[in-house]
Image 1 (cartoon, rainbow over the protein chains, first blue to last red):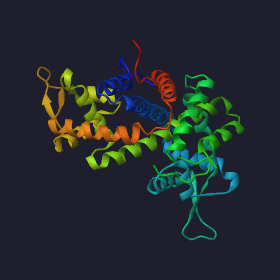
Image 2: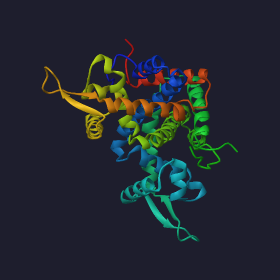
Image 3: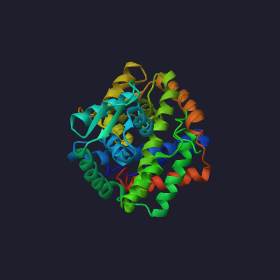
Length: 171
Length: 171
């Protein structure tokens, strides 16, 4: 990923502004959330770049990956995909349309519920998602410059944040 | 923020898939990055909800906030805004167009460089950004359920990640 040549951390600078304005109680939360948003941007751009040769975006890759890794338990319904991937029905439909046009997945009618549509990954889809994952692993996921312990800590802190924000519930 | 009623952590589940496929080296990085992406989604949705009564999105709020907090040092050029906010020129132009139509900012010609456009916040813009910030602070930034130490740790880990990914450089 290319450096922006910004010689200072804009998030740290914003935090100083917050403190100087008397918003000290919100300053660390603002800095943490803004950092999450900036990190997201960077990784999304990196992932999309790696996926471009596969004619995939990260959004479509995620749908494909869920279908691939859940193939053992049968097909997934479109609404299950949306729930797991935290996206709206319209976004799932768009992704599924494009993936189907590219012969990476196929739609199937639900055997007993006419209102539900299932999706199943094709042989070609399995091949593409396998190759795309190898590339993502090598160029994005293994390229994170944190120690294993630091990554576990980051993951754990974000689990806390995500549970509080309603991403999933611990049962 | 509403819970999705998902009774398991899809990121932890994906990490198990990664490990079972022999991609253990990439599993923790994948989990950390995917967590960042999901946390981003949740906070962006929460921020946009808080900002809706102000007729702002988080993207436009950020532009407005940068102009407000940098008002002492004079106006910012559109390209400086893009650099700081990590967005493309087209996105800055869109945001500036809309903010100008809403009388929150105004465009100014650069005194000595005809190719550069400056933006300046209006009195109304200052009032709106102040009110919007109070709401964001109370409902989003102060609502993060982490201790101050945990938030500092999260911020610090993300600084490392962001520097490596080229978000800014330490000089």
